[in-house]
Structure formats: structure tokens, C-alpha cells
Image (cartoon, rainbow, N blue to C red):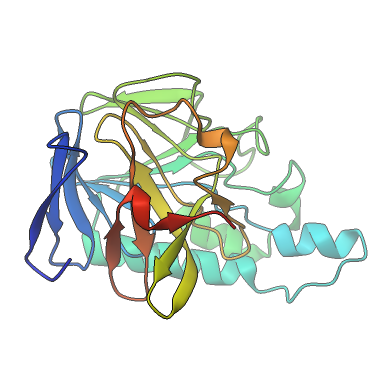
Length: 246
């Protein structure tokens, strides 16, 4: 899909078009959203930025178990999130669960990283939707903690509920797409939607991805979904038939 193009998906089920940021503009139920190349979801009407599955301090969690990873994941994830905040000046930032990799991650935060996280609340709402990795929410950082929230006619929670859930926005599954092309295939984190609900890609630098053809996604969509595959500067709309198993 080229810049400025419009397209229809799912036999007329819903439409999407390129966004000036390089993302995809579409409607989930009746709510206008933008899939941004960073993996963030943008709701312009309420100026709300939504990111899922940051898994901060995953590197230090692995190091504590003797599996050494470069300890730069938190800094890189925060850098990307701060770039989105600077670009959009949101009125609210929603962290859609598993913001921390485990319940001790907050204790392992470097002081400057903790200060940067706290800074996200300056002049705006900061909402921590809890996930399975961070069920207690933050202890020493500002913001509101919730199991789920309703906003602009959508229901935001960490883990997608089984069966059709019109208007649900969730994370947890870390969706990824293997895209088949003439010269082979490439694997990318992705948004996945059927126009009724959407699952966000993991935003964290060290978060992995689960192929959206995995059985974990079965039964979540009322029609064959669209993948919004993340590239360096744009989101590519990919139909179900272009996707492959891992």
C-alpha cells in the first residue's frame, strides 16, 4: 500500500489508509485510531497514546539468573516512548500491562530511568493497566493503576478475552507476522485487527513475538484479520493470505 492509498479489507468489512506518520489510519468499531510505526496506538480525538508490553528490566531479570544480555533494554524502550510523547504531546499515556518484566523490576530501575518514567506523568494522565507480569502495579511511581479502562467507546485491558469482543484493545500476546514475498519472507512485530478489536505489538526492546497464525489467536476475530507489520518508518498492511507460519 503506497503513501496516501486507501484500501478495503475483509470483503468490505473495514477500510484503512496511510497516515502521514507512516502508520495506518482506520476504525476499531466506530473509533478512529492510528497504528504508528513505533508500535504505539494513537487516539487523536482524546490525544491518548497507548503502548503495551514494555517489559522493562527484562535484561536485568535474565542477568540475575545467569543469562547475560546487554543491559540496555530499559534505556532503549524509554527512548522510543519518549520520542512518541515528544512527537504527539498526548493528554494521556496508557501503559497496557506488563510494563515491568517482573515484580522486582521497579527495584532494579536505575535512578535516572525511574525519573524518566515519572516524567511521563508531567502535565498528563499516566495510566498503568496491570498485566500478568506486573499485577501489583507500580509502588513508587506516579500515575493511576487500573485492571482495565474504557475510553472513546473502546475497552482497554492487558489480556484479550476469549471469543469475539467488539471494541477490545489488548496486548499480552506480542503479535508478529511472517510476511511472504517473492524473494522470501520476513518476520515483523505487528498490530492485528479485524476492525472489531485490536491486539497491539509488544513495545519493549527485548519483548519477543508470537506468530498471529498461532492457535493462541484462534477464535479472537470475526473475520480474517489484517496485520499491520512494523517497518523502520511505516506500517505495512498485510492480508491474511500473505502471512506464513514460522
